[in-house]
Length: 225
Ligand SMILES: Cc1cc2nc3c(=O)[nH]c(=O)nc-3n(C[C@H](O)[C@H](O)[C@H](O)COP(=O)(O)O)c2cc1C
Image (tube, rainbow, N blue to C red; front, side, top):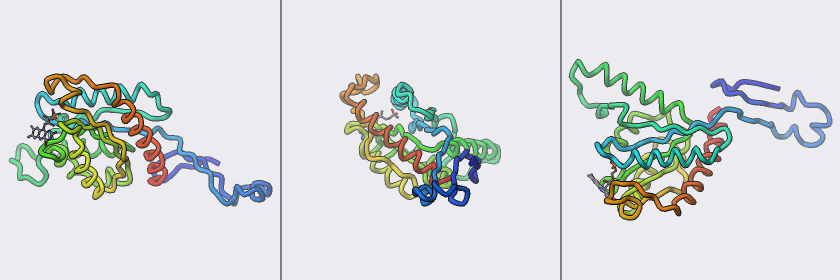
């Protein structure tokens, strides 16, 4: 039997009431079979707006690496924070700037709402996530609730303190973040701290992170449907 869920997702459901005697006898009626058929959409968030940022090369590497895996029913896309020109949350704006700011906030929240999971490409600024990304996250809430996140960071210690800071923020936004993260060193994975030359060993963590984002992403998608 085919049905659509509240948000239009196609689901295949066999309910006990519609099952025959033998299905019930052999136990199928105790558990509904449900297969969510939609593609899992994963947004790779470029979390820096700094001119000359390293985030671009790291986000591109992440997209290329993820696409090469050919995960079935999974699609990846880069979302560049710099494209959105978000205002500072709550800051007063001149009359001429208001419509543009409102449009930017709307576009940002609609884009984020369209994903099932996220990979944050997050540099470390003063042992925390950068201000631009924190500000952008403060505009969100229902758009990310019950969704999943993984991290790709870089910094003198791989950006791990930015990841830990992000975990705190995402906890409040009801986003489930996976344990394994990719941690590029500004010292050894970049030449002159600006030319990205990642060591191969990071691929193991990238695969571990993506595996978990995908499996949790599917589970949370079912939860939201
Ligand atoms: C204001 C500022 C603070 C920084 N603080 C840290 C830090 O605490 N730890 C660290 O590992 N790197 C730190 N860095 C280095 C950045 O992580 C590095 O410049 C990185 O390339 C920034 O990401 P982006 O190029 O994508 O903007 C800092 C850089 C700036 C500009």
